[in-house]
Length: 416
Ligand code: HEM
Image (cartoon, rainbow, N blue to C red; front, side):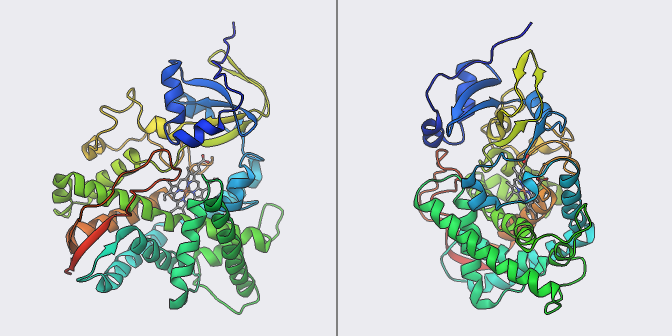
């Protein structure tokens, strides 16, 4: 007793995906009143799924693999080649264990400490000036990430490295010049980090024990071999790059503080629980990850729908974050909805779902939230600023997106 997967009848839907961006899947799910539809994207038959049940099946390693999923466009910019994201089974577990071994409570505490110090230090230059928050935080987080990861960074390098890491993130949803810039940025960054891996292995450089650079440079894979220099570089960049990407969430958070002054007031009460709720709501409401992809491992049936081996399947992260069945008033900013932690690993998943130790869920979720908390605390409690008229529009058609102005702050007053 099988059902046909609703078919989105166009020759190829890529143009609509590019035009519509984040709500692409949600719109079609609403139109066909379904959590599943089939289409063609970039020449490939693709099944799109949404909702909590879909997340559950998508993150079951029995049914899906990641090998050969990420298109060249995304490998050349965001992810690189041969990294953890494209591994399955034992090889994935071995590599994932490496990332998890970096995320110790002591290491995360150190990272929070570095973040706070870097705000105190960098903001000296913001005093009495006008700044674009996104640009400043991107540089700041590049400094923090490198210091924490054990990657040396000269003062005169900060701008270039931060910009390159930003371009790798910005380039993945693009075609044309933005894509090409992302690709060049990845090439330069892999050379930079590859050199550092070589220097560590030839003992010309000794990063702190237990830092990401130390762990990754000396990590043995499941066959007892050190990682290729290129792969080690990709993986060390898988630590540094996404820390820089948190600048996007911090910019969204600054917009939220501006649009909902009451939430800014609450952040001024130095309540860590509220900092956390505020950060979670920023990760839910504002668009960052649009969808994640996987391939069917072997033929199976889900809810009477047939999934054929090798088919590309995309899970609607944006849609799940704004699903009315899961969130009351999903388009409103209500940090209090997180007053009780959500322990369902398939419900709140802005950075991927399931068990992060066993599956592909983001390895850096705790890092992300801790850096957000420290940042919002600093912005709300140590900075006064005027918000001039500017374009704060968040274009959903652009992947990845950002408030257009990057959040301009005028007459910044820093007090500590
Ligand atoms: C994986 C989002 C921050 C390290 C992922 C995935 C998403 C994601 C969507 C893939 C989930 C999947 O394939 O099912 C984000 C967002 C971040 C962020 C929006 C906020 C800026 C971080 C940070 C780190 C990190 C700070 C490390 C310090 C990783 C790694 C993976 C990953 C290593 C690969 C996991 C695997 O394939 O097993 N992230 N991430 N991410 N993330 Fe993050």
